[in-house]
Image (cartoon, rainbow, N blue to C red):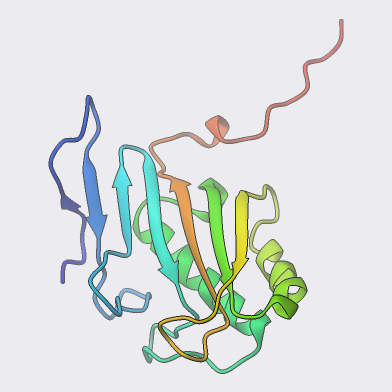
Length: 161
């Protein structure tokens, strides 16, 4: 497995395709299948869904939906860091919950990771995950640091004259 970006063929004017797959020791769980942790096209980054797996042990963490959501978000934040992005640059999240009744606690834990600006989000309930006892999985679309923070900040009201 490669721990640094693999450049792919150019995909358009001024853009390139890159993928990242991180081996153990980079602070993210290794892939459980044939996929990359993240892929970018130009300044847009697509982060593969993370499950509540402890990167140090490679095992599902013990805990309720709050603990599992926090582990997933920590894993995602680390992938973003390793790929020149951050949670402040996330534009969309897709969340998958095992149980509908976990939504409120999940939502509270998730919200704490985005103190300034919430990204767009879709949340669905699913029948299961690749790891049997997982309660949540989240994937992200983010911008990379090549885009300035000002470009993703909410517009400010124009003062009246």
